[in-house]
Length: 187
Image (cartoon, rainbow, N blue to C red; front, side, top):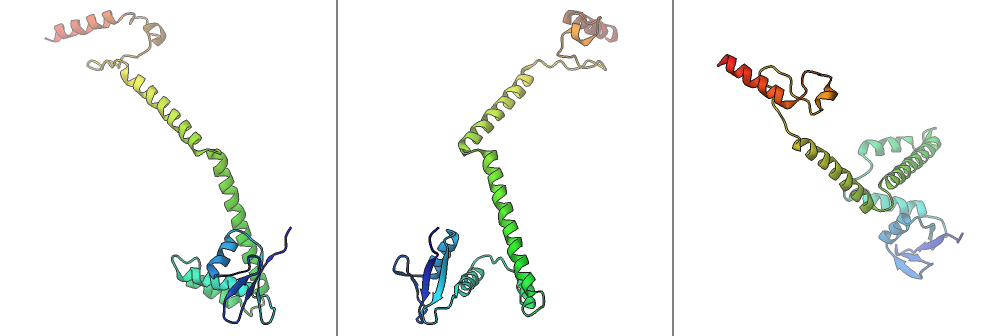
C-alpha cells in the first residue's frame, strides 16, 4: 500500500499537491475524497495536520449550495455535545452510524445489481418477453367465443360437456333447440 498523498497548505491559502507537483483547489480535494484516495493536508508553515479543517471547509461549502444534509436542529444537537461528557461517545456513535449506513447502501446496491444482472438490457429483454407471453395469454382468452347466458341460465363453460359433469348437455345443438322451444312457448 502506498503512502498517503501529502497536500500542503501555504499561508496564501493555496493548496499544493506534492504527488502531482501542482496547486489544487478545494474541488480537487473533494474529488480525492470521492475517489477514496488517502491524503493528509499539512500546514506548510507549522507542519501540523489540518485535514479535518479542510474537510469541514468542503462540507461547509456543500451545505451552502443546493440541498444540505444537516438541518439546523442536527447542527444544534452536535454543537451541544461539544464539552459534554458524552462528546467522545458522540463522535464514535456518528462514525459507526455512518459506516452502518454506507454498508447497508453498498449491500442494497449489490442486491439490485444481482437482481438486474450484469447487463440491464438482459433484464429489459426478459421483462419484454414476460409481458409478451402475458399479452398472448390474454389475447387467446379474448379470442375464445363468448356465449351470453339466456334468461337465468348459467354461462356456458368453455370445457367440453364430458368434462363439466353435466350429462344432459352433450351437444350445443340440444341447448340451441331448448332455447328456441322456450321462445316459442313465451311468444
